[in-house]
Each structure stands twice: as C-alpha cells, then as structure tokens.
Length: 252
Image (cartoon, rainbow, N blue to C red; front, side):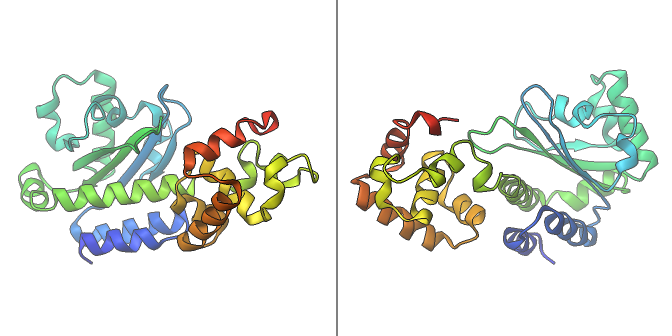
C-alpha cells in the first residue's frame, strides 16, 4: 500500500486500536519494523504511548524518551537510532543508552516526525524504525519523507480526535441538557440535539470533532448549528460562546 493511500485509510478508522494496527501493517512493506508514538503535555506529564517495543519502556517512562527532549524543538524530521548516533554526539549518556537499548530490539535506524495540533498543549510524534544500516536507510527514506510526514500528521490528528471526551464528559454539558424549562432562557427553543451541537461548538470543538463525538455526520452537525443559530439570532461561534457564558453553571 502506498503511503498516501495508507493516510486515507487512517482517516476513516474509528478507534485508536484500528489506527495503530493499520499503521503497523501498512508501514511494514516500507521496511519500518518498529513504531513509537508518544505525546505528553507541556510539563512532560500525562504521556500517551503506542509502541511495537513496550519492553523498551519498562524502565524508562515515556516522558523520558529522547525524542521528546531532543527532536521536538522544531517540526523538522530527525534521523534516529544507533546508526545515526555519531551525528548526535551532544546527547547525554541516558539518551544514548536508551537509543542503544532500542537497537538491541531491532531499531537500528529511524526517522522521527514531531507533530502538534494548533492550539493543543500536547506535543510529541512518531519515531519509525528499521534494521537497515545508515547508508541503506538514507536511500530508502529519502523519497518518502514528505509522504511519511503527511501520514504522521493525519494519524496524530485522528488519535487526538478519538481521544476527545464524549459530549457528556465536557464540563457544563449535563447542566445544559437537563436544565428545567425556563432556566435555560432562550435555549428553551432548541431541541436537545441543537443544544448539544451549540454547546460543543461554543466550547471550541470543530464541526468534524462534533460529528465524531455525537456520532452523526458533519453535514448534520452543520444543519443543527444553522437551526440553533437561526433560533437564537447568532452569527458565529464567538457569539454562541458569549451567549453560553451568561450561564454561570455552564462554565468549565
């Protein structure tokens, strides 16, 4: 499977488990035998880790992965693995030890792609590894970098989207949906689904995210939003957020 086709497959997956399985299967023919996906918050806490080498992290917490500390200062890909250690002699001993231990499990050469969604406090990305020598790996990867970068961006975005909480877990959602008649003011005129969509949009979720959270199509989300806006005399997301801000019980 070509990498761009793999990105399209990932786009349609409905669970993180399906995405990860598709990545492993789809990248193996491209000679990537090992995958590491790790993200953390700005304090290097709350890690999310997916890897084909879980044993590598038994004694090394995901937040200590050298990739996070040395490859994420920009969005440029970095050649990784023991085969490329001579190019990174500035690394501390602990980082070099981690990389050498990874090589014992077959991750000799790789390429890391930092990713981060606009407005997100989480960062990290993918480290794709192989058993190839430095010379063979460079030849193999040189024409695939742009396609691999796109694939990693798509996979990261889908994983982040699927990690979003369901609507009822968003602070204020339950209060809005169960408010007795009269307490919601103008919102009394909205159907439950229109309230749901309006609330999520006002909280900053995209219409695509709303669709996945509510298990409806993007077009249906747009229809509900249009009806809610029309009933309330709203023109955009900012006005919806301002309206809900007048309900103190709905503030996160």
